Length: 165
Image 1 (cartoon, rainbow, N blue to C red):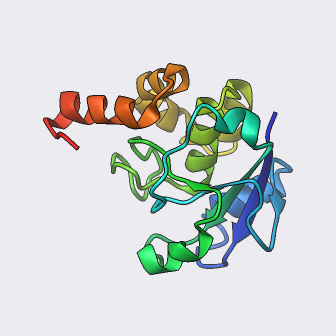
Image 2: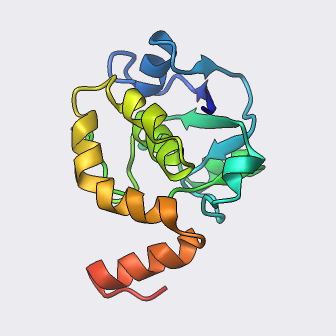
């Protein structure tokens, strides 16, 4: 089981903020600075299988997609990782690649790092959590078994979209 931390930047509607929900429901703790592995959607480094043993804590940077850009996220580069291609299941960004809510990002990282039960428990906190899992189960299974997530993501992008990176 990984310890989840939320760096809440107070940019989202408190009623819809999944970072706050994780804290309220006792699944994460608030932090003032990133610790352990930081989930950062602009990181150049993708999450790796070795991260499972390297980090016991995962920090979710909870900010608004509308208020955050590369410059914003550059402040959080140390020990940061991005997630591979996944589709949002939340109502605001449904079906959009890479545009995950904080709870989706945390659950995906947990799933990929072998903490499947913790990930499913986390997703149960939102009524659309099952939608995220249904959209991405095959991808999450594939990523969790891969020794090279960057190559696995490339393969999936080629298969789905004909893209070669």
